[in-house]
Figure (cartoon, rainbow, N blue to C red):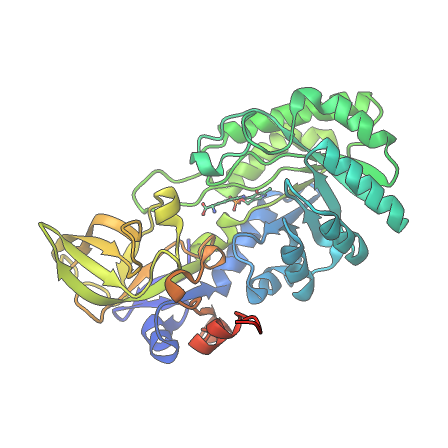
Length: 421
Ligand code: LLP
């Protein structure tokens, strides 16, 4: 469920008509709903009620300060994968003891940064990383809580570019070598082994792969405890999928996911952490664009938008499907026709949808991409020298720009021309 509904014939973000926002800040723009962010975070805390837990929002999905602060103020933890994300979480007021540090290639500088600033735990992904972390921690005279990310070798049945739990993926250590790696962790100074970490992929639409992975984690917990390790925390990763269309099968709800977690892991006397990103932010955001031209091609009509692949890369990169709807509500029963919906960038990959059935659209109309709150703005670029588009946040009847549109001057002034040129 989200808070983007037609009211009086106009698509609203909570109580604000999108036409008002477009008139004030121009298109294209991203718009997020506070009520949806809050609701989605709440679904996870409810789902895990009765079990000690921390919901660590994976801020790679949407790392705007206002979004992080909205969730952080509710008590959310954060899952970060870079020094930049850590800095963003801290700047939004999230204390270090609610931040977990994941990622396959943590640098010495990033380790120093999080150890100095405070960290709940580091999820270690390899032996060389573990050795370096031990050295950095001992050099700094601290002990750092760690988990080891294990690769359970399960098929998450999602897009190949976002599956992470198969043996062939770069993530984690093979579960078959866990005992050996945990023994090494226990020997190394500066590390306090607190648990196990697993994340098998993103946009999962089935609980079965999760359950298979978590069964393996439960077995490993028992094994490692028998080997003398104090396993008291399980980081279960993120990845729960969202409905991108309104017709396809509904992905499992957080409540069902939570029930499965409690069933599989509830008897282990552990605290669990989860790292949802997409499910919290995805359907809390829209990308709103204007139609520049309607162009008749060879046997097809193109809607040429002022948004492009640099603003929302998911269709070009993953072949992702986003619902695209007119901001002005079509009359009931109005005729549909197929359009190819494209941006102005100079490559054919800049295509959002092919032969998409839409009501009749004219130049100047506003359209909204649904489910664009996660992996939208964060993956955007300034390709074709198109400045990053603004982001705005709605709460009830108020909205605020939370990242302004840069001017061309801002864009150019980031470059430096050498004195000898
Ligand atoms: N934890 C870890 C260690 C992750 O790598 C990820 C996502 C998450 C949590 C959050 O997963 P989520 O709940 O958002 O599915 N750009 C792609 C998605 C990449 C996901 C990468 N890792 C897309 O647009 O579909």
